[in-house]
Length: 483
Image (cartoon, rainbow, N blue to C red; front, side, top):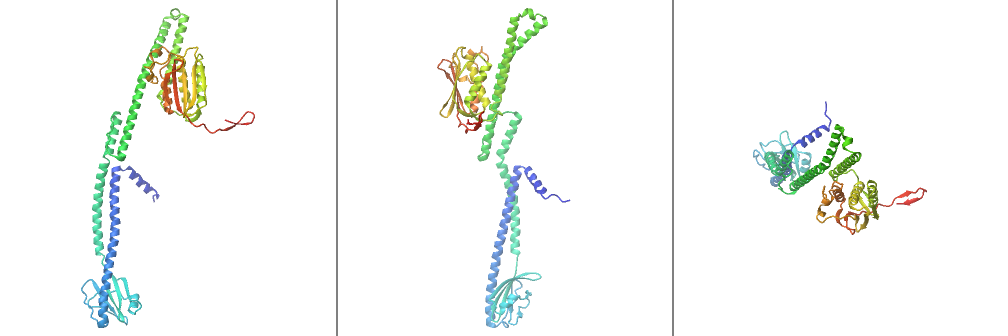
């Protein structure tokens, strides 16, 4: 049963991919040397063959000229042919009638070819040709002499090339072995930083110790790889530290409302079990206690939602789009009024386009308005202003409250930070931290200052974007309007 034609290459590819990088480098080095030696052998063999052939032909021509000169002087039929030395040169005289003369004891040459006969007849001056007999191959040079021709031949000897090839083969094998050893050594030396990097990564994975930076060594790609992994470890350390701080702060902030909620619930349960709930807690006190429970549950719900939003960081499925920030501000102000009817919001906004995530920006603006609403007196509105300022969209939210102390300004946007004056007010200390995160994610900047009314002025600057191209839409009457 025959195998599919493409299976073997795929199997070889899978085998190659399973090899280690050190093995691959060794095989590549040995193969490269073997190919180089083979190509060098082929080129050298061809050059050597041409050189030997050229030398042999030149020698045949020289010997033929000497023999032709002697034959013309003495006559082809009477010239004395040199005795056969036992090897090397062979001679022959072609007489005008086509017969031949050879020295005594000389091995028989191949029959005179038709072309050589034409030289003897004067059709051409000379001829170099190769002939094969039953045992040997000959290189024969025919030269016109008198009324006939003389021939000088040599047995084609491939032994020098064969010996050269054997020598090159042995050298090639030695070079392959040496190349494999060199490749192995180079691979071991070159991959030593990778081995140490792997060991360090395995150690970090096993010990979960992100503080163990990998020593920066080597150069080029290895150094960049080590620096990249160290940067990744640093980012993981920062992420773990941020998670730990978030967990610690969350536990601290959850402790107080949970404790209060648990005590109030335990009080209700204990009074209910004794049957003294109505007598111990008058209707007014019971209503106040239930309202406190509802407020505490609401505070916990708000804190949990803010913790979830903060823990998600910059991860969001919401896509970025070009939007009018004025629409976002108006929507946030509307939500603030619906959540706390007592908040009065005065809007002074102009159309400014930005590139961002609508829901995240609306949440940030809502937090700014909620924060200002907690401090602004009942008869003083929260002022929200939006304008274009150069290449930025500037949003300002100020209140007429007591303002922010200078000592608290550097920590206003920290998570869970609450000034001493704000601890009696509802809130988790996460609202402005979420604002800071959203602004940073949009490439903006959030600052705090004192407003002209004496309260806090929270200022957000975001990079402005070009408004989208106007699109045509149909009005109710069927006319076309441009938006």
